[in-house]
Image (cartoon, rainbow, N blue to C red; front, top):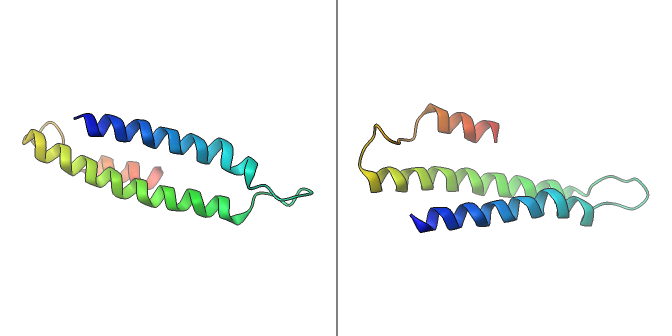
Amino acid sequence: MDEVTTSIYINSFIYYIIVFIAPNVLVEECGGGIKTSSHMIYAGYSFIQAIAEVVMVKRIENKIQNKNVLRFNKWHFVELIMG
């Protein structure tokens, strides 16, 4: 599934921008720390990523039609909670 591979690459690119660039750009002057907007961007990204994870697993599950190979289970839930 090419769209899964593409979405993984795009997700990785966005993640590295959020982790390495956003905190440096959104830093406050004189030791004020990181702006709240940086944390809000990451929270939004995490929420969208959780939804994307569920959608992707369900699409793959429907495509292969074999619940023994892949199904949305407790491991996916743990992965969503732990990030």
